[in-house]
Length: 230
Ligand code: SAM
Image (cartoon, rainbow, N blue to C red):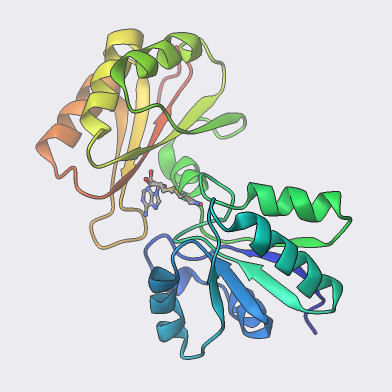
């Protein structure tokens, strides 16, 4: 029995085998599934071989969607929120609907699963006891450099998301602030066919990323100054 609530359902970040049985059970029980892009999410449901009403939820229709979801759950329905990939509300839409549900005293339940930041961190070899998630840095170099200046003395592992187009610029800017030797990890295309992870001193990792393919999605992790892999 799936109780009425808003469910945040994590979906695969590449490998469809990572969708949990519980996630499938909740999606099946949902009267509707809020998503970023209905066409993208249709592909997931095609693989699952069942259909649900998919409703796009974005900046322009969010207020109405949130109210409808609140009404649905209040009347005993199960509503799910998914994103294009990974955990909703983590560098993806979700925060505002969760806040509205909490403010209304309505139930929100996480169905945990894939999250690129956590998958990369866990396998990185960098300290996992304390980390700070920073998501995407601003796209412009000057703003990125200011961020690196502010963060360079952080004592915890720093976790960033980055895109195909900016990964090399990100690493170059980072090196200009923290130097060649800082231990970093660059994880590309996690759970996918071309998954590649490089961990080591920044200059070596940057060279390896430059030599390899920069296509795909990246997580970059930065260890605290002085951290050594051995
Ligand atoms: N909500 C997602 C999560 O839980 O990881 C993140 C969504 S965010 C819009 C997309 C970014 O996550 C990508 O640009 C990339 O930095 C990272 N990402 C997503 N999938 C990834 C993968 N398979 N491998 C590496 N990074 C990934």
